[in-house]
Length: 373
Image 1 (tube, rainbow, N blue to C red):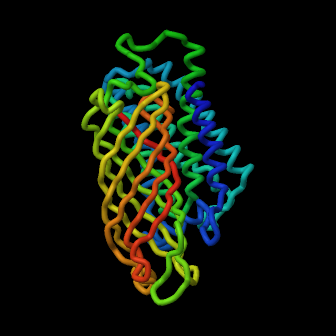
Image 2 (cartoon, helix red, strand yellow):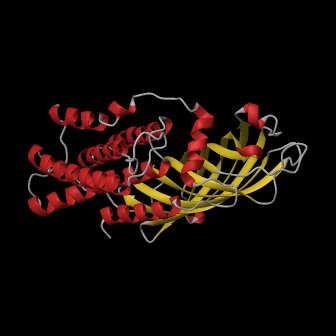
Image 3 (cartoon, one colour):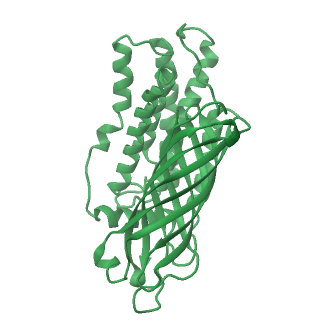
């Protein structure tokens, strides 16, 4: 399946996932992350850096090209490829925006879905990847890191729902895959650098891969969790954060790769009276993973760490404690690009939580988007 079709499939799956509202008292995917955002930075938080940051991958791309640093294609072929990409992205974003007419989270207008800023940032990052990712994966990583920060900024600025960001990122990357595909049909092998070597698509079982990415999930409590001094339940909600994997060994007896895993996370909870609060996790541990079928990878990991409650005016009266927690889970990844993969995961977690019930148990279901090299 061509890469751009994989991105479109991912968009469809994301839309289905985002429509689910979860268990009773849990907010929807989008409102859960909006609640998390307000708990973390406050309802009135705003900054404008994302209006300019979205264009920074293009500045790097043009700067390298002007400086004479050899890219994949000539100026003319690159211009045609990028023009196709911009046309596809603009048509998709604006067509969907004004067809769906979704209200922005700040209530300012009905053009929220998908995020145009995020689509632009990921489109430009994908262009940088196509032209210079073969020279070094760090060009790709830098571009996508900036694009990801742009997307997160749109949430922090209360201009977009989380599903708007996911859709914008998929449209931005898919538009470049389609744009370059169309240009390749026109130009064939002409105007491509003699030094260009197409990156390998898929996992090499002989290699040890590092990876870093963002994850999004939903927490479901296993059993009851009560506030201090009464029987009112605390409900789980959205979770998100950054995960990093550092390989140590892929010796034959391991039948895969083993290494260190690190994770930071933010979690939202609903307390009695429709109040909410966040907690913040810092965890480390180990993982094992095994690639198969070239584009698939299974993994298992176990981590331990510490959790700190935020929003003390709510979490304090509810009896929420800081303390040690553990997480054990498994996942299945599929490559969607030369250095990119998406992963679905499930994790069992147990942690010190409330005064009345010191140990809580929960199930977190979610997905990750990861850059690997």
